[in-house]
Amino acid sequence: MQQLLDFVSGPLFRLTFLIMILGLLRTFVLDLWGAWDAYRRAGDKKLAWGDAFSKTIQWLFPVRRVFTRRPLYSLFSILFHVGLILVPIFYLGHVQLWEESTGLSWWTLPHFWADLLTLTTIIFGLLLFLGRLISSEARYLSRSQDYLWPILLVVPFVSGYFCANLNISPASYQVFMLIHILSGELIFVLIPFTKIAHCVLMPLSQFIISLAWKFPARIDDKIGATMDKKGVGV
Image (cartoon, rainbow, N blue to C red):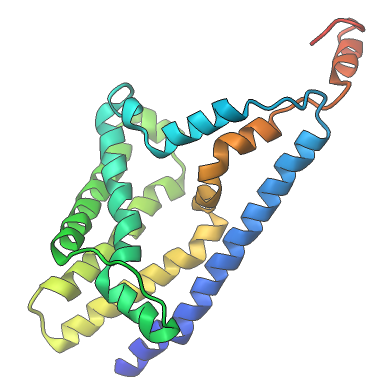
């Protein structure tokens, strides 16, 4: 078992992490190029940079929106994402592994907050899954991966919490640690090929929308000709 753990936490971890980085980089470059190409061919090249920046800030910190539309779901989603982002990056054990392999280290979460955020991520991840399952509106809009992701994202948090906090036998610890690492690596590999890939563009989403949603030059004439309304602005 120890040899298997050494393999999945060493070469397999580096491979899956590299796949995720290269896949996200590909998505970022292709999407950015598509938006720039649309802007290049647009007739109207005016961009509301200030409005896009303001909407980006509102999206990153959706304080106003939380209690205006589906407040309970929005609150659960925010609390779920806070732990989902902070714990993998700032958990002490993870940072120590990065320091051992690369020499790089950074600030870490206190143990209490790491445990609290882990538990809130598990609880709110399961609540989001149940909410999607119970709500007829959410079921109508959901695809298979929308049900899979909350469960899959919770698995490394549950197994990691067991390893860090429960008094279990060495054999059980190794099993939970194997589940923890493999589930994290499965997430690494899936991210670039699913809807989660676009998380890399989320901070730039409003600028991308402003760039991409431009009508090509002389589209008025083409639409007017099709509608037998040539010369009429669209």
